Length: 467
Image (cartoon, rainbow, N blue to C red; front, side, top):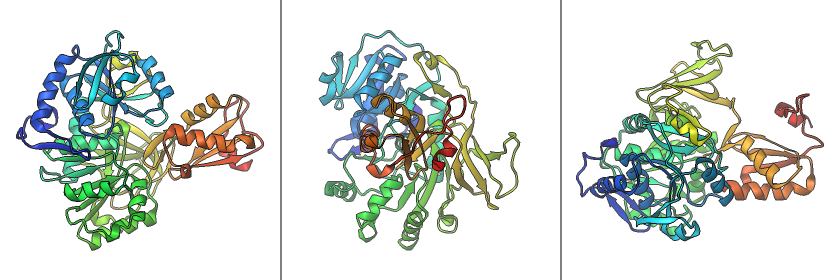
């Protein structure tokens, strides 16, 4: 069974949620066996999850059973859900029980707070190695999915549990969404060592959130930059949390001063601060900054995770071996996923990457081999930890406001949206906030006379600031 799930005592607790539900390793194994008989072998399941025990049970249970879940936010925008449903036509859909009546499909079973439904779509042919699917831009509902295989799960679990030195005594607090690659990787790596995952959907500003942390004796917290901004506002540095010994950060660039503040706090209070880097395409974590360098090399993504390799290539594709020389960062490891899917037919494709990927990030390394990201070659941002496709955002705006000219650029700290019509300024911002489920501070709308384009009609993004 994957993730060593058959090694742990059946009474050992695999997960506890903030609603008071819990799941043992024995129950998880039993549910995986049950899931084999709920659907025909190798069924595609559109799995809409929340952060609770049921979400974990249905995700891991289906993967263990050999079904292939496409894992999505249970509260995904209806238009985006329909787009993905029509494109991939899953034979089964599984949603939180309270939402099941909204779909109108034939109900098969309700278990762990989720209802499995049969849609009537035909079975989908899929590659034998395919384990699960995640969207590349979960917030925009991009039809482009990342195809994971079983080897990716095992490799990610081994790599992450090794550099974090995880054990069955760990009780990680999981606030990151289960449908988000870093959140899911937390489950993989901690189940691999028989730990107990503490999962919650409570707001970090809710007093019950802090009650959950203290009562369940959380030993680690993993967040994205926005998570730590909230901790900072909540006077986290004054709190008495003796069980919490590890803070880890991923999900995009964190402001240097905030990074340093948490690193120094951990140093001064006997805790560890570990910054990480990763992508959905590599089953989350790809690099980590060892705690000994947390302050000295603040802002660095560090070194490759165990059993993997980072490297740089120049514009000609040749290796870069000299420190402080910028190039495209590449990664090699068994956690590199199979490739993308753009349609139902693509689920039958094999491994197109063979353990190697060009990340699209511009970086350099120092004399100690620690890497620093300086920019992004591709058209993606990580806003508050959520990967967002700039091209997808332009499509959202144009589909909502017919005829409106727009262009989206930005950094991992803020998206800049350029428009040519002042009257849409507030409406566009509100639409992006609503569709992407991100705070308004994530966006700045600028008005220019025209969107610069070349003769072929392609937007000249580099010229936007000149207008």
